[in-house]
Length: 447
Image (cartoon, rainbow, N blue to C red; front, side):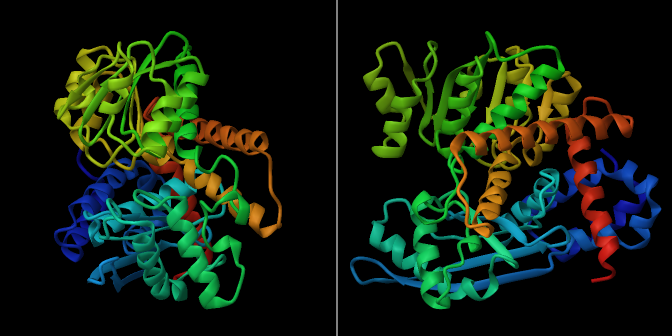
């Protein structure tokens, strides 16, 4: 899709200033393609170079993380924190520990986080961080030593009014606990609001574990309702079998749908009767085994090694694994097999070609910055509870999450209608979030 003439130069500048960061380029291009109508309608944004300022992080931090494994060997990893935009509130975004992490990945995630956080309507800016450390196969003590070394540098850049990290791929409750413990040790402050995703016993929020997956399912429920439909009688396929996927499956079942397939890095599982969520949790969260273990225990299920889950016909597809997992090829397959709704539980799991094919085929497509905003929304609710020294019930927190996701969906549709693109969730999400951030940046002056 061509860019608005006032955005072509901005994108060229992004490419020139950030060479080789292809994921970041893709994320920026996706937003710029959508916000042309807003740039045309609000010339004050262009005059103040709002887009150029949004595309340049306020701060980029790269640091060395030395640590020692159980055998005494010393390892050196690289740590990152990109504090992208704080016009709406303190930087907010997760930490990812994975060998693929480099500056371009962190910037893509942080850029997406600006808009995702703005869509929630809550006072949080956008940031992201992580390391190329691989936690797979490491002992608890090795992970603890790495997290302590990581926080020994990161602590000086974060705080409940400055930058509030959370978890992401490779960073769960265990890692957050080690990170928070080291922060507390260094600062001599019990500053609960500096990290979210904490354990309930030391300041965490109920529903935070479930939030991203639940939020994606709530968003799809609204997408279906907007079409005069519901989850009743619908089959769904979910990629991944980690935290987001597991709880998306659980909530889809609660809302009346039936998830018939999910995947991991070794292949995909099919259970036409509906994935047994308790067995899946046992295999993935307790025993940490491959999905083939599920098929070994359930006679009517089958495991397909080395293939993609998008081969399985479905009404609803929820990519909840990683970026760019649905290309044009996978999108064509889903369309051919009758899929009518796609919502991104992961960050940018669909390539631009895949998005275009879905939209041309009339498939309702919910972009990640809207569909998976439930995780960061509940992180912001955790921050609220920490600030007031309070703890809410599971039911109250889930109700707040559902209301936020319902509001995100409504604003995406309303904004798309306002700008002459009815039903275009991508445009609605990007324009609504962009105008919120732009208005705040104008109000704060040239900073």
